Length: 91
Image (tube, rainbow, N blue to C red; front, side, top):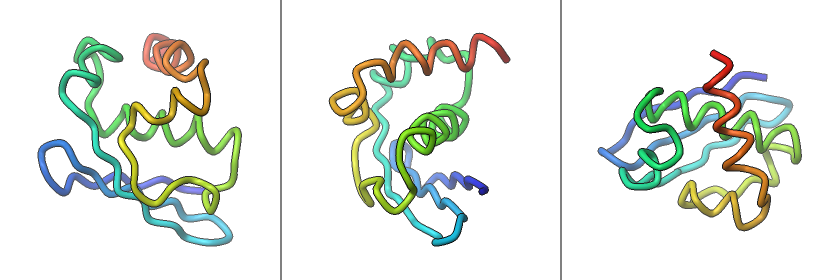
């Protein structure tokens, strides 16, 4: 499985997940949420990659919403923000 992240606009990205079925997702990421999660220690693209790895560990790519704001993840998975912070601190 591969994850490709492409910037569309300043705060909007296309994330393509190639697996058995290839899916495309449009994700909005506000500067405020990005800074809160990462303190700008990693790029927005890297945050999205980590976020999709987090999601794919819990559901198939075909189950992930096709369009959403990144902060939506924490409504479905309350542990998301804590887990994401662990990801970039390891690297």
